[in-house]
Image 1 (cartoon, one colour):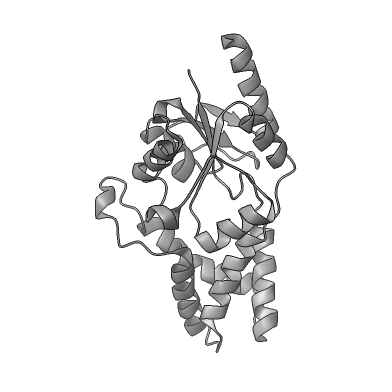
Image 2 (image 1 turned 45 degrees about the vertical axis):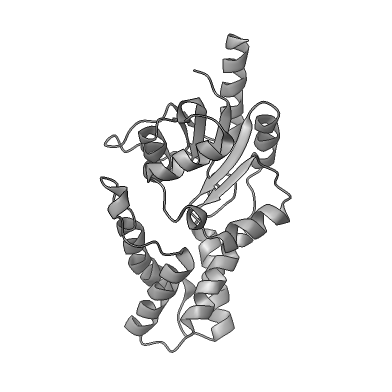
Length: 241
């Protein structure tokens, strides 16, 4: 295998984005708007609506027939409108959606994120490819002074992973072929399955020791963290130098 580029997902790969992060955001929403509902309950109801957007936004069999593109902020606002109506709560859906976008822009990195990026950048072209709005990713990249060879968000691409067109677009921006690219992400469907369909190598960052969905294309590597992936890349380079 010849790898010239390492392309990484952002959330739950480089930066934390777990339930605790979201509950902090929803607590801030409840506190700022004086909502008489527990953040956990508001989040659970909102998430049950928001997930429908994720399930329907991409037609994997015919990506060009996917629904019209919507940003997360627009989709989240719609989910908040329905959530507040269902719970009979008078609240500001626009402000809640903005708080959710801002929350993503303030996520904290995993301990292994920056050391891995430094290692990868010394040996490969490095890019970020993420399902996220520009308003979340661009401030995050600026805040942490991340330097990469290419960056592509779903908003820039007007499409979401696992749409293969997104993976092909980032490879083109890097000037490499998909077969020369390793994609690194935390989700089996959006990241691994999508990357493999696009002709890339794929590494699954399985920090939570989750079971693998065997109905999806298997990753080339499954690791518990980025340190482990760096060791794999070092061993591969030593074997091929």
